Image 1 (spheres, helix red, strand yellow):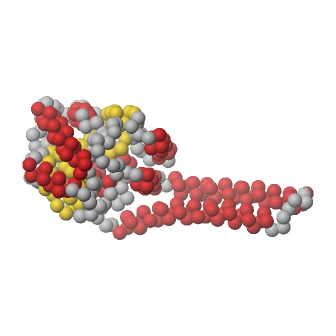
Image 2 (image 1 turned 180 degrees about the vertical axis):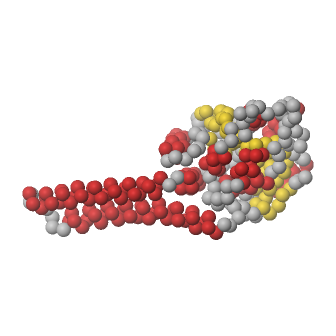
Image 3 (image 1 turned 120 degrees about the vertical axis):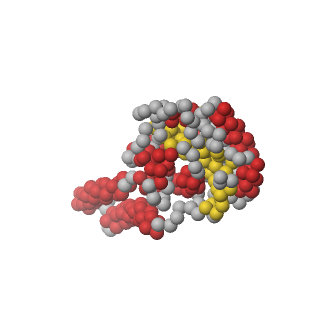
Length: 322
């Protein structure tokens, strides 16, 4: 790992996906603009560093506010997607469109400590192409969210997926890391698993997460579960192998049940004619078959979506793109 020179600062672009963020957007613009100005004064980044807001088909005044800020603040740039495509697609749209030598992705809710961006840039100059923001504590999360999130990271790592524990999508990537990310063409996006596949030098920066500044979370339980399923099925074939193992286990269990039924019929008077031989296999095998079909269907569905080769997002407008 070779240190990069601090004598010539590089251009920084901060990429922020937004969906119905009008309540927090003003404060986000204020804090981010102040941070970039401070980093310019500290000679960490160049004067043409910018902040990119990606509107993911918001239904409130989010895009209107982004457009207005971009007209009065030269650091603010806006990307409007033609329709809602989801957090991961909006984030990728920003990363693939924004200019700059260093790109930092972060959510708009100000829960992640934005001052850590300064340390991320310093870690890049020490030779790291990717710097992950890692939550050292999750005290602001509910017990349910904290338990399920940590359980997900543990599970997905055990399934063989290379993810950074307690890392979401707050990270810095160098330009060459972004170019390498562009080579990944899959439609089913799970950036937390895709970025580590790049393989360049990386490190972690820990921070404490705070309460959301305003508005409501855009990741309810349903979306969290969908993201978890995408992460597992996009990067691990273990569930398919689990089905094979489960089938073998059922085969052994069926032999055991057959021996038990035979013993009951021959050596006891408790046997109910036809019950064991019909009811038990029906419920057991029926449930396993439905589960197996569901898992296989999830993989087939992903193959179906990938085969269509549809665009992952469509950009409608880019403001202040100079």
